Amino acid sequence: MRTIDLPSKSPTSPHPILNLSFRVFFSGAALFAVVTMALWAFIFTGHTNINVQVLNPLYWHGHEMIYGYALAVVAGFLLTAVQAWTGVMMPRGYKLLGIFACWVLARVCWLAFGYGVTIAGSSTALLYVAAGFDVLFAILLALVVFRAVWQVKQYKQMGILAKLVILTLGNALCYWGIINTDMNMTKIGIYVGFYVIIGLVLTIGRRVVPFFIERGLSVVDKTGHKETVTLRNSKAQDIASLLFFLAFFIVDVFYPNKYLLTITALGVALVNMVRLIGWYHHGIWQRSLLWSLYIAFLGMCLSFLLYALQPWLGYTHSIAMHGLAISGVGMVTVAMMTRVSLGHTGRNIHQPPKMVNLMYGLMVLVFISRVLLPLVDMDHYLIWVLVAQSAWIACFVLFCISYLPMLARPRPDGLFG
Figure 1 (cartoon, rainbow, N blue to C red):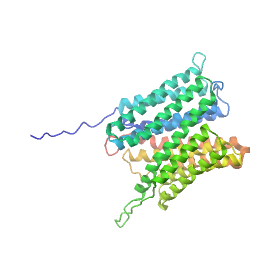
Figure 2: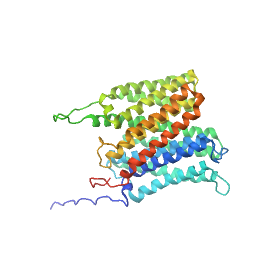
Figure 3: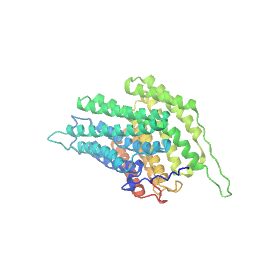
Figure 4: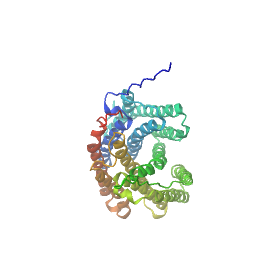
C-alpha cells in the first residue's frame, strides 16, 4: 500500500519580527544607525568622556559602522538569502533572538564606552564584554550558514562563508589591538572588515542588482505584451573585478605604494564602470528601488577613482575611504533593505513607501557633503561633516518610520515569512 506524506507543520515564531532574520536585523541595524551616528556627532565634537587613551575615537566610529551596523545588515540579508538558495530553514523565533541578542549586547557595550561609562573605574572592561558577544555572534552566524551550505552541498557558497570567517578574524584583530594598546593593529582590523564588506557587496551585487533590474522592468504592458529586459554580465569581468579588488585590498592595508594603489584602484573602477554600462536601462529612473542601487554602485566606482587620484592630488585618504563607505555600505544597504523588506513581507515591490525617494536623496546628500564638498572647500570641513551626519540620521529615521511597522507585522497574505 502506498503511504501518503502528510504536510509538515507550518513554522511558527513568538512574534512576526522573529519569523525571518531580515526582519529583526534590518530593524536593529536601522535603529542602531540613528543612535550610533548621533553619539558619533557628540564624540566628534568633543562632548563625551570617551577614553581616548584606550581607543582612538575614529576607530570607535569605524568599528561600529563595520562590525556593528554593516554586519547586522549582512546577517539579515545572508540568513534570508541562504534559506532561499539552499531551501534549508534558517533560525527563527527564540533561536534567532539568541543570535540577535549577542549582536545587541556587544553594541550596548560599545555605545556605553563611547559615552564614557566605566565599570569599577575602567572603560576597557566594557570592550572585553563586547568582544565575547561579538565573537559568539560571528561564530553562530558562520555555523548557521555552513550547516545549510553543507547540508545541500552548495559548495559554491563557500566563498561567502570564507568572507564571514575573515570578518571574524578582522574583528578579533581590533580587539587584540585594543587589549595590547596597539592602535595600528586595531586600524588593520577595521580596514580588513571594511574591505571584506565591500568585497561581499561586489560579489552579491553582481548577482542581485541585474536580477532586481530585470525583474523590476520585465513587466506586462497595457496591451498584454510582456517586455523582457536582459542585462549583460561577463565572467571575465567578474574575475577581473575580483583580482583588481584583492590586489587593491592588499596594497591599501598592508603594502602602501602610490603607484600600485593607483593601478589597482583604477582597475576596480574601470571594470565596474564597464559592468554598470552593461546593467544600464533607461527604465531604472522610473523606479526608485532600482536607480538607488545603480547610483550606489556608481558612487563606488567614483570612490575607487578617488583612491587612484589621491596620491597625486593631495587630498586625504579619508575622503576616498568615506566615499566607498557611504556608497558601498550606506547607499547599498539602504537600497537593499528597502527592496528586500517589501518582497519578503509579501508586499508589492513596485509600490514602495512614499518616503523612499527622500531617503535615497538624503543618502546622496551624505555622499556629497562628506566626500565631494570637502574636496573643494576644506575651510568648512566641520560643517560638511555635521551636515552628512544629520542627513544620515534623517535617512534612517525615515526608514524606521516607514519600514519598522511592516517588519514587525505579519505578512498581509498570511504566509509565514
